[in-house]
Length: 312
Image 1 (tube, rainbow, N blue to C red):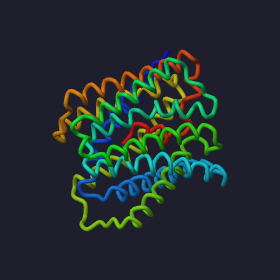
Image 2 (cartoon, rainbow, N blue to C red):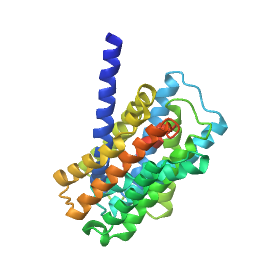
Image 3 (cartoon, rainbow, N blue to C red):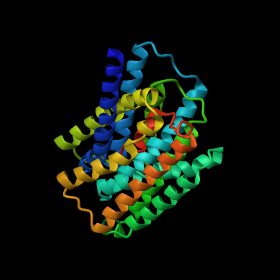
């Protein structure tokens, strides 16, 4: 009985961690890019988090991944973190509101359902209805006031979401390192790629980031990248996939509320309607997977990958 109660408490804490921490990362990124170049910030974040996690795992006796596993994890890390998170960070640097960014990223499960059909994970009629509804929500969102004057920023977030969805589905077909080692390798490779991209695009840190910028990257490293990944790994092992991935429709609400409360962001009625439509679409797709019995097949194998499907 005590074991059940203990696991129940851990499940609640893990869900709270994903809902709040991953939902807050969009706002924290918005704070960070005020004093960091975007690609540099994302690169430092993931490389540092990856190295710390890798060192801890090695000290605990975790074995090194095989060369093939490391290459596979590196490719997924590029799709999920370098492209997925990197473009999100650039978009927020280009003044796409953090709440709007989170709403667009919430469509990752919709794109993932589309890509799943490539590997024989056939979507049900209910799932296709959710996909079409979600795409309609994206179109409606782009007619709102925050994105009409920033089409490139909106495109960056959409491309990031598509890359994340494809990488998430593809990762379930690859031989990846075991346990948390996959997240460490993905973050190290993605961080290195982002730093190279920062150098090639001419980003320069002209002054030391202010206190808010330093606190932001520290939060993203410790909470957004390391603690949240462990929480998600626990959920994958102890909860149904539908519950483990429920953050996908909670995070946008958290992000929007934080953006409104602390960054002065505002959504007009059309954007609120789009938010509701997209969240409803994600719920429909996840319910469709549960009823079709494909929820487990559609679960993301990579912890880091699933993390940034909603983590900014």
